[in-house]
Image (cartoon, rainbow, N blue to C red):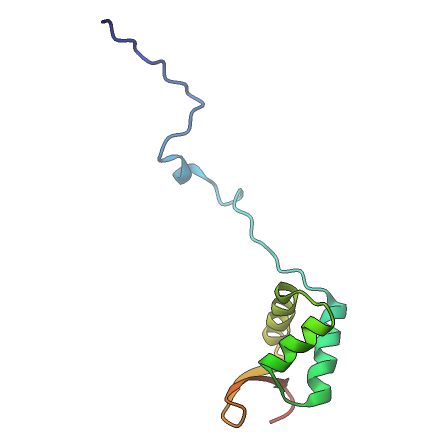
Length: 102
C-alpha cells in the first residue's frame, strides 16, 4: 500500500502557537460594579455598624441581589477602603464594617 503524504496546511495551529500571542491580544477583564448596588450595600453596613457575612447574604437574598454581584460590590468597596472585613471572635464569623469605625 502506498503511503500518502499529508500536505501541511500553513494555517493550522500547532502546539506551540500560544507562544506567538502578543500582549495586545490579551484582554484584561475589568470588574464593572453597579454604583447603586454599592451604595445600597454600604447603607446596610453603616446602618448596622457591624454586619456578619451570613446576615449580609440573607439580606442580599431578600433583596434579590445575585451572589456574584454582591461579591463584586464587596470587593470593590474593600479595594476602595470604604469598608473593612475582619474576623470577629464575638460572632465567630467574618464581619464587615465601615472603615471609620473601630
